[in-house]
Length: 88
Image (cartoon, rainbow, N blue to C red):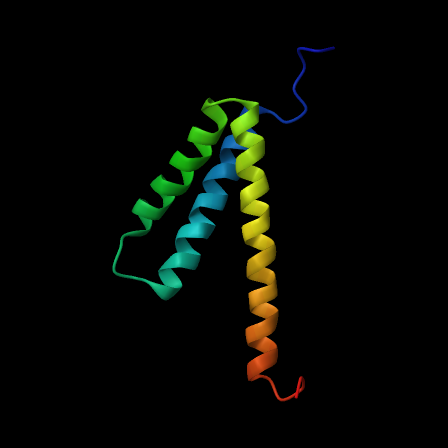
């Protein structure tokens, strides 16, 4: 039972490629001077680096990325509310 995978490796690779493409498209919206392939390579390289170094580094990376995401959500709320008439 311990040697079975919940998610097949091919599905995980497909999901990672889709996430890298989404990251590249999102960054290209603001900065189209750098090729989207560079952003895909950076995203996949950082994900690979986190997975290669073991669980401790992966967990710590996920912790800092989640703090970054929460900060972005608060900033999005703040700037949206600041520019909206509904919050005034």
